[in-house]
Image (tube, rainbow, N blue to C red; front, side, top):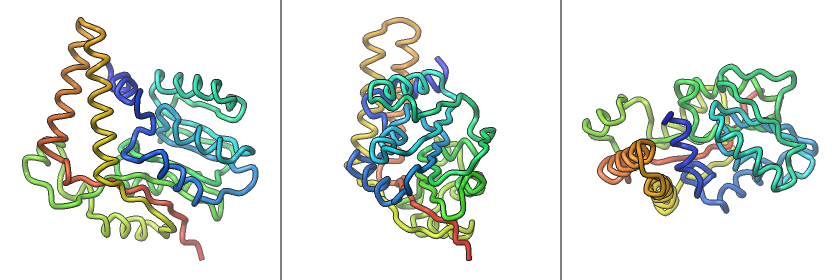
Length: 248
């Protein structure tokens, strides 16, 4: 089973695909205060929950969703049809860093998908290329709530500088030429809901599908749950930043 399929299965009960509640997703999208006829882009859109909700909140907006996961994009297209939004959502199965559009966007999202560009800073640079003057970026990124242990870094296969603390994350955005105009810091309750959903949904699917695929899915759920409960819970935070290029 490839990584994108496992992620798709695990997010079936939590399509927001980040430790963010539906109410806080709405708050972030509303704070963007998009203009009439807004163009929206999501780089790493997954099942499209953020884009679909943005289209519901802005009835004259159009959106492009970019992801490499075939199953995730198919799910997004199905949901768009169910909600009557198919004519305003354009899915693109290409790597996020390869996507190009003829016109810039009023809002560009990349929530929990900055790994597609290599780093938070690289993501900020990539997003800027898609923004119209005065446009906004909505970027969801991890940060260290407290210094990680050596054991956790080994599990992640990363170094301490992969994430900053919360203040340092905002500073990285500032140093990349963005001003933070709003943000949401995920609560422990949001994290727990996300992680229990991810691991539990994948576990249920695995038990319903005995055999090699079920075994692989169950192993992935167990590994993820162990890393969370015995590793990054209360160590790794998540913040969704609403950013605007600080052009003067």
